[in-house]
Image 1: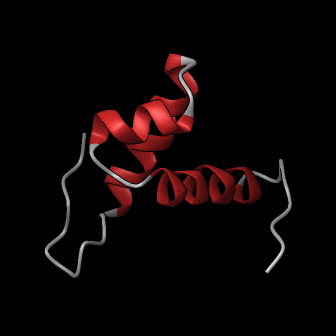
Image 2: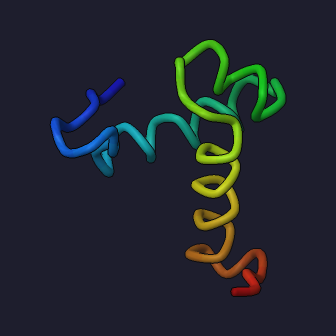
Length: 62
Protein backbone atom coordinates (compact mmCIF):
# COMPACT_ATOMS: atom_id res chain seq x y z
CA UNK A 1 0.00 0.00 0.00
CA UNK A 2 1.19 3.54 -0.65
CA UNK A 3 2.71 5.66 2.06
CA UNK A 4 1.79 8.78 3.95
CA UNK A 5 3.07 12.01 2.50
CA UNK A 6 5.02 14.39 4.67
CA UNK A 7 2.47 17.19 4.33
CA UNK A 8 0.46 17.80 7.49
CA UNK A 9 -0.90 14.30 7.98
CA UNK A 10 -2.28 14.04 4.46
CA UNK A 11 -2.07 10.85 2.49
CA UNK A 12 -0.91 10.27 -1.05
CA UNK A 13 -3.48 9.56 -3.74
CA UNK A 14 -2.01 6.07 -4.01
CA UNK A 15 -2.59 5.44 -0.30
CA UNK A 16 -6.17 6.69 -0.54
CA UNK A 17 -6.87 4.57 -3.63
CA UNK A 18 -5.40 1.47 -2.02
CA UNK A 19 -7.35 2.07 1.19
CA UNK A 20 -10.63 2.33 -0.74
CA UNK A 21 -9.85 -0.88 -2.62
CA UNK A 22 -9.05 -2.53 0.72
CA UNK A 23 -12.45 -1.52 2.10
CA UNK A 24 -14.25 -2.94 -0.93
CA UNK A 25 -12.21 -6.12 -1.20
CA UNK A 26 -12.31 -7.22 2.43
CA UNK A 27 -15.98 -6.73 3.21
CA UNK A 28 -14.94 -5.09 6.47
CA UNK A 29 -16.48 -1.87 7.70
CA UNK A 30 -14.78 1.44 7.07
CA UNK A 31 -14.19 1.72 10.81
CA UNK A 32 -12.45 -1.67 10.96
CA UNK A 33 -10.23 -0.87 7.97
CA UNK A 34 -9.42 2.61 9.30
CA UNK A 35 -8.40 1.15 12.65
CA UNK A 36 -6.16 -1.40 10.91
CA UNK A 37 -4.53 1.26 8.72
CA UNK A 38 -4.17 3.77 11.55
CA UNK A 39 -6.28 6.46 9.91
CA UNK A 40 -9.48 8.19 10.98
CA UNK A 41 -12.72 6.42 10.10
CA UNK A 42 -14.26 9.74 9.04
CA UNK A 43 -11.39 10.47 6.66
CA UNK A 44 -11.51 7.01 5.12
CA UNK A 45 -15.30 7.20 4.83
CA UNK A 46 -14.89 10.48 2.93
CA UNK A 47 -12.45 8.79 0.55
CA UNK A 48 -14.85 5.88 -0.03
CA UNK A 49 -17.74 8.26 -0.66
CA UNK A 50 -15.65 10.42 -3.01
CA UNK A 51 -14.61 7.30 -4.93
CA UNK A 52 -18.29 6.42 -5.45
CA UNK A 53 -18.99 9.96 -6.70
CA UNK A 54 -15.98 9.83 -9.02
CA UNK A 55 -17.29 6.58 -10.50
CA UNK A 56 -20.78 8.04 -10.88
CA UNK A 57 -22.25 5.76 -8.21
CA UNK A 58 -23.25 8.25 -5.58
CA UNK A 59 -23.85 11.85 -4.79
CA UNK A 60 -22.07 14.10 -2.40
CA UNK A 61 -23.76 17.04 -0.72
CA UNK A 62 -21.61 19.96 0.37
